[in-house]
Amino acid sequence: MESLVILAVIAGLPILLGLLLRVSAVFLFASIAAGSLLVTYMGDDASLALGMMVRGQDTNLIAQLILLLLPVGLTFLLLRKTMPRSKLLLHVPAVVMSGLALAALALPLLDAAAQEKIYANEYGNMLRESQDIIVGAAAVVVLLLMWVTYRHKEDKKHKKSEEGFTR
Image (cartoon, rainbow, N blue to C red; front, side):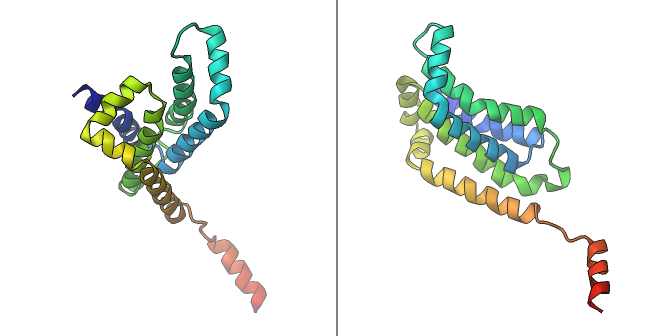
C-alpha cells in the first residue's frame, strides 16, 4: 500500500498542480525534458558538488532528483495561469502524459529499496515495463497539442495589404 501512495504522489502531484495552476502541458513537458537532460549530463557533477557540502550516502539521489524536479517546480512557479481556462480540457491528456513521463523518469533515480517496493506493485511494474512507451507517447501527445494550439495565425491586415499588391 505504501508503494502505491509513493507512486500516486510521484505521478499525481505534477498532474494535479499542472491542472490547478493552469500551466501549459507544452511548458510542463519541456521542463521535464530539460530536467532529464540535466540529470543525464550534470548529475555526476552535481552529486559531487553536493557531496562536498553535505555528508551522507544519498547525495547522488538528492542531486539527481533536484536536477530533475527543479525545472518543473520553476515552471509551476513562473508559468502558472499561462493557459486559458478555455483550453484546459484540451491540455488534460498532455498534462496526464507529462505527469506519467515524469514518474517514469524519476522512479529509476530512487534507491533500490524504494524501487523494489514500487515495482512490486502491479501498477509500478506496469510503469517500469512501459517507460519508453510512456515517454514516447507523452512526447507525441505534447507535440500534437503544440502543433494544434500554437499555430501561427495569419494577420488579416497583412493579408489585405498583400492582396493590394497583386492587383
